[in-house]
Image 1: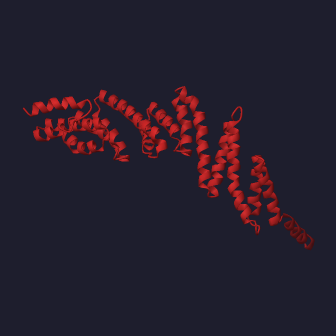
Image 2: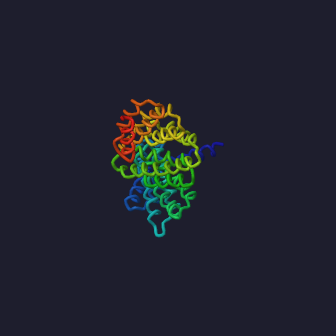
Image 3: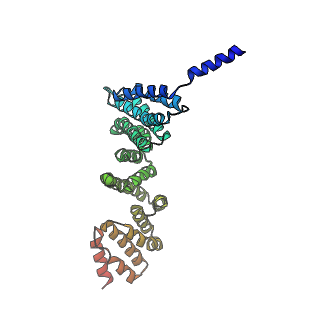
Length: 314
């Protein structure tokens, strides 16, 4: 028993690393990183983290290794992405590993950087299906990229369009709204495109429901979106229009003033006021109708409003 005890002690002594041992491994990793041998660097930094955690005086080396390790995986992801031919699966694995480790070690900046490249890989992978109008396949890939980086607005626009083309209107609108809500100047062009496409698909959907005489369907559609974002000017306008089509003049009168104020485009604002005036006129509320028609100053409704005013003021 005594000999066994001595052997165990001796074994433990061999496995115990000193701060100098950890430093040696760290230096090997740093040298590999400097030489752009990121695979070896990653292995060495992992060894430093694993074996240096409980070594006295090695804390700073472990901390530096934790900072460097996600960067190794980021570089490995980049190499796989830029290879000829590109190895996208390896790129995804390495970028994802880099993001995971960066989050684990509290480096949010590096985590976001890795995630942005995860999204870029998915954007490339989904591009072929998207260009071939295979929107189901494209959406399945873009979804993963959007989850990794919602700020990749170019890909997000493609995802939203894929949803809308698949008939998943609400999912598409949610993505478009998220893009349109971005205020940083770098998103300005994509935010404007999101608003344009939101209007395009909404008008198509509304036209489809109008063709079926389903004004309640249009109102339900608008209510669903307004429950998520009460300030959405487009769906406020659509709802007022549906109430007018349904001849629910009381609801037009109730909802139109706020809808008009929400509009940022003067033509759209005038359209809502025209609808409000029409509702007042239908209810034989002459003075209110005249006041509303006078607020119609732009867009295609302006001439019709002038004619209506002329009749009411005879």
